[in-house]
Amino acid sequence: MLAWTHPACLDHDPGPEHPERPARLRAILDALHRAFPDQAWREAPMAKRGDLLRVHAAALVDEVLRPLPDDRERLRLDPDTVLSAGSGRAALHAAGAGIAAVDALMCGEDATAFCAVRPPGHHATADAAMGFCLFNNVAVAAAHARDRHGLERVAVVDFDVHHGNGTQAIFQSEPRVAYFSSHQSGLYPHSGSVHERGAGNLHNVLLPPGSGGFRFRNTWLDALLPALDDFRPQLLLVSAGFDAHMADPLADLMLDADDFAWITAELLALARRHGSRIVSMLEGGYNLEALAECAVAHVGALRA
Image (cartoon, rainbow, N blue to C red):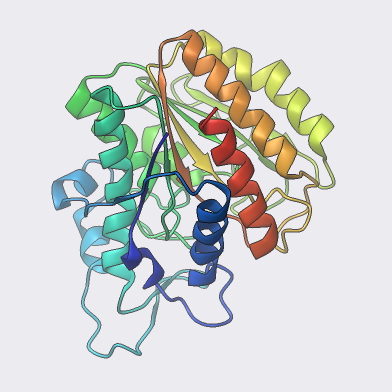
């Protein structure tokens, strides 16, 4: 497994009371360094403007990258999404990690990669930052894989507890990119119905509050994994959110670290069956202890 991160991703600072805080990434990196001391880490490059414009409007790119005159200033883009002085650079490295990982895997360096980066991305639409997300990192990576590597079947797998409305909206008319998501019903951003099918490339399943590992695993086994298998992906991009854990403060599912290890192992087996590769990118997860535990379980399965 290859791994990317960058110190700049710690400089995005939405404020001391914000759930999506730098301590999230520190907790993950500390846990992964302890669990896998032999894992080599690469510095994520910055995404280029052209990379971002594949999926984002120029106005959004300009808004996120605007300089703030005071290092202590924060600019609120919506009730949940905040820019600080270090946010633009962090967002460029977060998006750049996925591009670098796709390039390395497509060149045959390895079959799996994990990008420990923030801010997260799957809520960001073509023209709006939202839900803690500035640029849609996994969408940038998918568009890069499609356009630069000529892939015809790119799958985005999203097990974050919140629906990745931005990823879905960006690719809903693009049959070369298919989206597969399980997420809690009745939760922000209140999208992701099973009836949202796009160009036949959207696959959403809602989990009621209180659902545990048994229901989560059966949902993937019965509905999402067979559809993913039928798609025969050449590349799997994972929106790896760990906020479906039972200890997470922002949601009400009841998963544990073993459930995230299980879905990762299932995805790895499917990828190997199709001669495919997996790039995983960090999304949500807001209880630091649970987040670190789940990241270790996920990366351990990716390294298997």
